[in-house]
Length: 568
Ligand SMILES: O=P(O)(O)OC[C@H]1O[C@H](O)[C@H](O)[C@@H](O)[C@@H]1O
Image 1 (tube, rainbow, N blue to C red):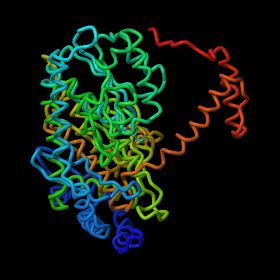
Image 2 (spheres, rainbow, N blue to C red):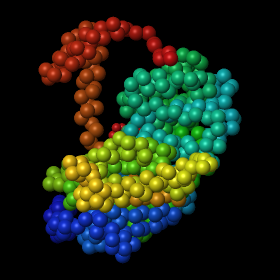
Image 3 (tube, protein in one colour):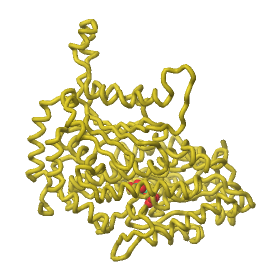
């Protein structure tokens, strides 16, 4: 395919378009009867079992998707990514989050230089620092051990670490290592988030980790200044050196902020924000909370999937298969959304994290060459743990819109409970739902079945389930640091595969800029109005009216305030 030609102009794409008609003649009820088909639609790697037999696809569909992958040069693009080529062309950068979890002796080049030694240099520094803090060798300004950590950051500097932290919190080994310690995340610029984070914390025993790739993100920098004030107003300005450290690619700005460069943990421009949880962004706060050896297991799990992604043939390659099936659902079957439904409360922050990984990566309108696309890219991701979601939005999934679902289950619970005299144990109860929901979606319930059950005629249509609703099931052996790393890497690479097929740049995010610059204009206005009483100018009627109302109704806000921090 010539670089400016669109993937939708290829024969493979057109073939899949035509194939939809064939698939529309099938029903999952019947497809599921074909054991050979179902058997070929299971794939296993490193303890993880994926069952995609409930996708609205046949083996023929898969072959056609493999042809599409070939037309889109997916294999070549994967290799180019691992080789450190500048596949993020609009920012002229490599995309090398795989190097963050590569073994110490691996060689991964960016711009002719092996980056793995730098990665391990920072990892070793984190191991050393986190051990000193955890052991009490590094203490706060008043000599007390720092047992609590507030990680200040937003977007990719927040969601991945929050996901992993939430998943580890109830894991036996990790929770033992975290005994007596707390890790909190301050993300939103809303002062309420500051209040929530500092409530119950003592500055004397708190370490603040400012996490920002750029060190310019408005929200993070204001929150960092707020936390600096919280520390210095309680302990004096000299305490900042002992109570604040940073993670960034911009070490110059870290120093300007007043953080000792020795206490700054670097990462690199070849790590995208939403792919940065395996850099110091996640590794530092998580190591402070759980110890480096737990976090190293997480990195190993991700690395295992990296190797699989690079080397497994496409028919057995989990991220490739899942990525291609997502493209099938979005671009051919026309399903714009995807539900991420982990049957594990520990995975409650998976969906919010994948929302950024997937939607910021693939929500694009032009090809990587800048050509407007005649097809939609990306999907609308949302999700909640089961069974909570079942009592909330599943109604729509069963009888309303068709939303392909990812069901994620775990064989061994992190926290088993057995009650004498119960029919099943608590985890089996949860898993009963995990196994039942995909079949309910796939098979549905026909009017004939309802009539046999003597359902009153006027209720038959209400109680009918059309079925034929696709899902896939991911079964993890357990949920420890290693498995969490595997799961993360599967989703990261799946998103990349989708972007490779759609021929977009999944690694830039220009769409977040416009809102930021308009906020700058509003910020200037609020400042001028509050300080100098200037009237609101330069906005459309609607925005002007709203801002004016806001200012008038909050006229009691002091124009030259003295410092006020939350006090709850
Ligand atoms: O880590 P930072 O530089 O503070 O960036 C935080 C976030 O900022 C923006 O919203 C970007 O779109 C995100 O991709 C990024 O993760």
